[in-house]
Amino acid sequence: MTVGTSSAPGARGVPRPSTARHDDLTGLGIDPDQLADGLVVADEHGHVICFNAAAERITAVRAADALGQRLEKALPLEDLEGRRWWQLTDPYGGLAIRVRQPERNLLLPGGHEVLVTARYVRSEPLGPVRRVVVSLRDTEARRRTERSHAELIATVAHELRSPLTSVKGFTATLLAKWERFTDDQKRLMLETVDADANRVTRLIAELLDISRIDSGRLELRRQPVDIGAAVGRHIQAYVAAGQPADRFMLRVEQPLPDLWADPDKVDQVLSNLLENAVRHGEGTVTIDVTASASPREGEETGTSVTVSDEGPGIPEESMNRVFTRFWRGSKRGGTGLGLYIVKGIVEAHGGTITVGRAPGGGAEFRFMLPVGTPAYLQ
Image 1 (tube, rainbow, N blue to C red):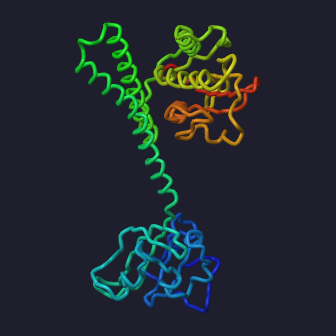
Image 2 (image 1 turned 90 degrees about the vertical axis):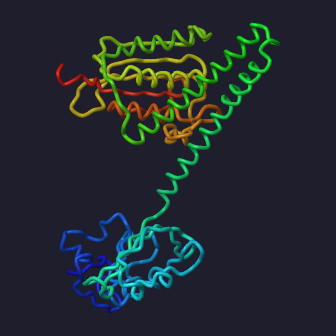
Image 3 (image 1 turned 45 degrees about the vertical axis):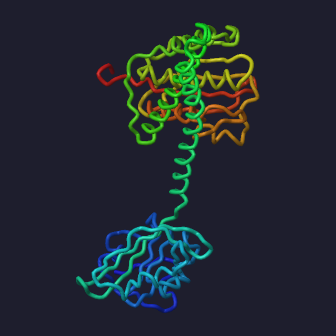
């Protein structure tokens, strides 16, 4: 059996001899071009005998040009200090006990960074190297993850700094000058400390939710949920806080299917969507609760909740970023994590959530949940 890519059999007239088990991918029914990682294999003479499609994509080198070339010429890698990697590692002439090179960041011509691992295949222990098998991975996906984590840390640090500074300042002032303040002044400062402590608690809860969503460990405690009543409670809270009652319109279609969901998580979704409509939208906030087709295969019915406003809405070019981390729209404020968490909670229930333009021109968020009836009640 031999290995290579379909685009370069016989390139430069270099024969491809039968190889050891590491190279015999075709015997296992594996086409090197089907591998997600770049694969480059050199024979005992250091000539490239395999250069798969992923390696072409990562290096921007055609397999036809790489096959038959010396490994160091087909894959001219340098370390981050500009030293030629193949001269440093000397795979064919180095220590005979070596079997691999651990993953490391190296540079291709032009400064493109890749993750590289290498395996030295010997026909017998301490024998000469028969094959050098190199695996390549693009670093862009990892860099995006690292950037996302860095942004999360920076956002959290910024959001924590303000309330903690306030808490520290007021408590230090009260401890140092307690007798100088009137009861009303003390109450005002303690209420501010309490509000800032709540803000820190909410931020920590958001971080825990993100961690559970990203790791797939978001736990749901399903029980019957009257979602129309849940929306009504949120509206009453806004009215009690000073919002005019006529700013909200709740329409509940009857009958609704019995919904089994985590009531705390559903409240979190409703809270985020209504806060988004009240804070960033304008005019009447309309909430429609209706029966709908279930978003989950095998179920006929589900529950749909639509929250819309009459504000400027969300620009078309931003629609696909609304549920990503740190999206804040045109107005600053907040962590930008709320809608990301909303999407994670809805999807953990097996539901779907979409964003669009409301009939009145504002933003319209619609989420659908499967009824989630436990098996013992079906």
